[in-house]
Image (cartoon, rainbow, N blue to C red; front, side, top):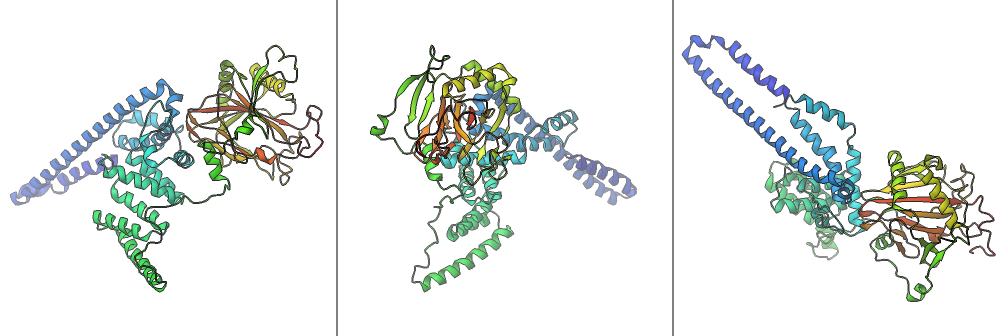
Length: 536
């Protein structure tokens, strides 16, 4: 019982016995007290039942959380490698624990509330839960996963299987709806309804689901199905005012549609779109289909003739004294533009040290504004990153020196070592590392010219997803812990190589760690001199 309800309860007892105290002088009047007392006893029983139900719910929640946290704390990173687990953790801390807080607040358990209030400042926010839901939708789209697959947790390479409840699916649909994304609203509300129809226990009503689903379907112009869903809603709740008005509105629209159809000698019953078949809307990324196909491993395959141009070799950095005795294994990943992979670039110990240094500094990854040169966050880059200096630890200087030895380029004018962690649905959509002619001031503040080359270290394996892809020519490079890939962003003339537009695919299952070094033009004029043509 909420505190104010408890106050009303005992106040009502006080008022009855004090305002009606003269009833004892009349048996007829006292009989009214009998019924009043009967009502009080009934109210008391309801209060006791409510308290028992509440305690039972709290006990059940505690037992469930005890089992869940025992599993998750035994291997936090492995547990969170499953994106559904990551989403449900964010949702639990932002939504479910708040509901438990409201339940416990009904009692005088001040110790728990104080502790929860203190801890809550560290909990995910509503924005975080929305972001987690969108991450699941991103995975759904990129890897062509239907809601059933995600809901049941049937993902490749997962160590800890997890599933979405009706409430979870409903929450996904609401997130999409609030964002004006009716495509995903339909998909997730349909999944919530399916699981509800299968008899799953839930506090979400079919009426709530149908309310969102019918309107989202209407937004696709599917009047027939919108009316069908609305009628089903009304059959469950005939007093639902919005559903009633919506149905009348749909019927008027359908009548107008029939009139137009009859004038065009088209069957009056023909729907605007095939019922239930809704296409994903186009977005701002022109190469979306190619990019996502590459992420799924369905991209352009290199011809056998071109594959013959790819070789493996030992690389000594053009007879660099440090590499003569212990050269690196070098493998061609692509011929033109030339992309190579180096093996055993970083040891496990170095990787763990770099991660240890980076973790406390991780913040939302930024991109450089092409007009101002200022770093800012962007929706197309979803990861957390930090920048490490050589003074932070000797291992940073050691890794930097190694990249200089391998590439033959100087790190003196290179950017700091950037460490990035791609978590749930983490990605970086197609982009260029170098600045184009229409953004000449992108690196002006650095004073070191354009980014001539990229050296990318993979510091973890990824169970599924997370490839580095090049949509222009169809390369897909998959993460391998301890390896690194290298390519030039500029031709020897200084002109940008637009073929190097690339992307980091969303991580489907796993936790992706990378570090990279961007080499700049200044200081490398004689280390990589100009070619004879513009495209050398």
